[in-house]
Length: 192
Ligand code: GRF
Image (tube, rainbow, N blue to C red):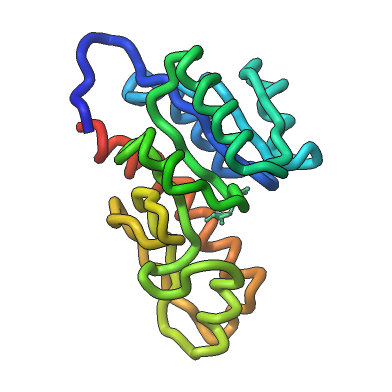
């Protein structure tokens, strides 16, 4: 990752599809002095994504694309990011898969947070799978995004104990709490 020069923060877009708790957390982090990034754009593939409310709340530009034509949409997004001088992409609960070509344009500049101890449980339903397999630990991982789903280089990972009382809901809650610490830490690690 290129080193930061001067006081300027790296302009960043966050891609979401849902609740946006990680988005909210990243916005708050981005406003701290130590943050190497600023969040200048929020992109969602769903107009009903709850997280879009943080765009209004924090006065950040938002854009919604339905991704019906992936190629066309990605082209439009790439132009927009260029126009806005956005250099870094955080995926936070974004449910679409970006193309190889798009990723190539932002090589090493796209990261994602995933609710499992990757390489275990790529894809969906991670907590249910961990509990069903009687795993002792669950967790979350921040990783670079490559064309292969949930497979890019790991940046940081946090392990959380699964207790005999845990169910999918309680585990998801515990993991999310850690996600909110891990994502900013991973960003700090990348830029320092
Ligand atoms: C998080 O659990 C994240 O790990 C996964 O999607 C979820 C998004 O949650 N990729 P939120 O929308 O940030 O609340």
